[in-house]
Length: 412
Image: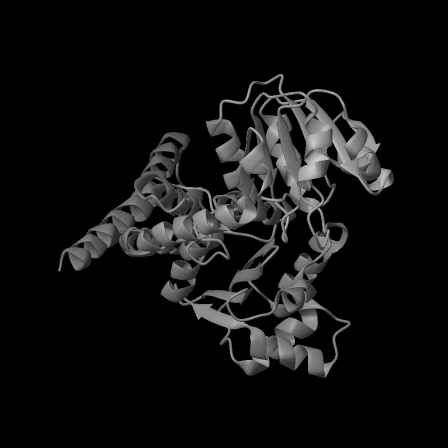
């Protein structure tokens, strides 16, 4: 277990733009990781990179001190100078043995995430392992660690409320909209074409909504948005919003305007003689919708300030689950330690068959070669069967005895 190490660069102790310096482009990922493993003489290596963390997990018999870290980061990015290398050493969180296992358990269970309870990290950990396995840089220790890490994360998500109640504003907005029983053929007016609107449209299109009219200052940006998420919609200039006469059910707006773009007068122009209830999702800060509109018209406005308040409340609920999750992690850590002990024994014993066969071969060809020349075929067959039987027992019996010793130690 002491051979296992993790170097972590996370949102907890490193600025996000600094973390970006440790991201490796896919085009050169295999080459750089394979070279890193070879140059440092690492036994195994795994690389995890997300928008707010980079984790380097490896096994090595070397002492991970400042000299080792200097050589590590010098090999990690050969373009770095001494200043950059020493800065990386200062920023790195170093975990070893059980602490490294506990850390990766927390990462995959999202207890160490920027947003606690976000399940996406478990997929990122799994894919990171699969990619590194494909590169041929992992081995039995990291395989076992990854396998147990995924199991632990799944147990945390199923046996706690850590991932319940959405905490992203867009996710909350979508859930609030669904609560209103909006029909699949509903007509949406979309105002804006930024990241928030893009994410919201992904939610909606994924769940079967498809009638969208997008108003944006830049028609080019709106077209790029549609291309990015493979969506069809009518695109219009923001200035044409007042002239929109077609019926609609929902308005979703998020612009960077410094003041409201939906005044009572403009909304009255858009709504015309339509008295049916409308739903407005205002994700802009400051707000795009004048709240006074709801006083004169049949409209329900869901504003970002309300959604942020709900998000904070949900985060507080998730925080209460952390102690329950930590107990799960502690129990699973104990299990992993015992499994790793047994697996370590199996790895060590896996060398026994080769050693025994080498001894047997030397006995046949050198030590007892002259004695064997006098044996007839029948006697030689009996001897071969006898040696084969002993070879098998020399492997299975010590393994069984060693496991029994381990079991007795664990009971004590």
